[in-house]
Amino acid sequence: DAPEPRIAAYAPVATSGRDAFDRCYAAFAGWIAPEERKERARSESELVSETARELLDIERFNGWAERTKLYPAVTYAALGVPAGEDAPAVSGPYTRRGWEGIVSTLVRAVDATGSSTERVAAFRRAYVTGYDERWRRFLHATPMPPRAEANVKGSGYVRLVDAIHENTAVALPRDGAPPAWIDVVAAVHRTEPAGEEEAQAPWPGYLALLEQVGAEVASASENPALALDLARAMAQPGETSFRKALLAVRDLVPATGDAASAAKLRSILSMPVLDGASHVLASSLRGLEPAWRARIADRFDRGQLDTQGMLELYGRGGALAKFLDDDLGLFWGDQGAIPVIADRAVPFGADAAAWLDRAGTIVRMLETGARVPVVMEGIPATTTRGSIKVARRELRLTCSDPQPAFVYTEGGRRPHRFLWSPDCNALELRVVGLDANNDEVELRPRLRYAGPFAFPDFLNEARPVSRDRYRWRLDYPESGASIELEYVAQGAQTLRALQHRPPPSSLGSPPR
Image (tube, rainbow, N blue to C red; front, side):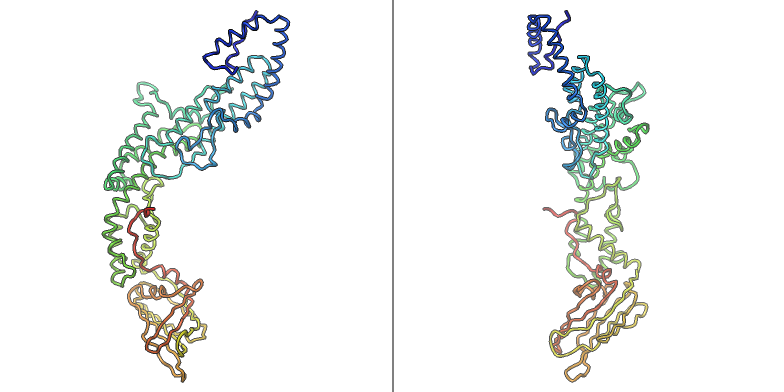
């Protein structure tokens, strides 16, 4: 005499037709003889028990969960978080929609039969454990590559925390309390004040801070000069909306519970602020461009500079030093781009970064008078035109500390050691040959360089043959001779870098 079960929820029937289905099923069951009804109930119970062994096998379920398209997986890309194709995701059956839409229904249906009680309990425990583990892994695996993002409040990281909270706040049949990390997420995402003493709940307060940051980012996007002012403010002590938001994030996440998850959550909540800061720093480059072009790029765009030009650009108090002091010093240092806020720096283009790095080496060498040890050894010369053979060559470098000339007689092997510094401001190479009568004759003109870059300029005239080995081609119109000289010069690689190269026209990346 028990009422017929309502089974439409488990049948392939549209929601609007479930009541009619249950009435029809009850009418059908009423016409069945009692003996047949008992037999049907027994066979259906056995069928449910047999099916439960397959449906409630957690390994089989997990295999199905990874394949099914019934409920979409939660992915970083769908939330707007940058991630690679192999990034982890949470499969649909382990989401709130999956639990409420099919898994809980399946468990209740099997449980209602009274069969397979232990199997249902084991499945329930395994499912809840797997559910928690998947979402914790999704939290901890969140990729956080630096990028510039103007839409601060609409950041994918905000949607990520929304999704984690929505899916972990579901009422699962737990044996005890939720894991501590879920409580941390819930505390952060709380939208109602805890009492009269709390003026604003944590999550609305966080979103309000993002709105302030976003307003500044939007203004800076349209005004490079304002972006540069904001970048300078971020680079110096003092409160900015960016620093205020980062400090609030630190206090927003409870320090108790799962420390690793709390730390990851702080990092995730900081990302919209930092990505907004990166957008400002990128915009600030446009604010630096006019001064860069006027004071550096356009003024020193020649392929070669004489000594005076080198000193005007690289010397103490020169154009580059003044530009660094006035405009770039907060953003560029001896080690490259300086982090302005957290790990975010002005995104100098690759060409500009390489030029500034190279130029910085020249400036420091001139300022400090750095000494570079050099070891030179001659390699026999080759005459490529004319009949004169090289007998010896004299390489003389004039420095504040007297340096002996390096006299190399062809075929000798004695190395020459000296210390180069920027005060070595003159170089002369004298080549003596033997004519057809074996008489000595000096090949003219002598090769001369002057200024603090005399020796580096000489080295840069050569063509590298192998590591530390260099070749010069010299032509002597008076005698009609052409020769090729070679030296092994240890330390030359450092000095060859002390060569002017035209600065790039832009501090940023060139347009593609």
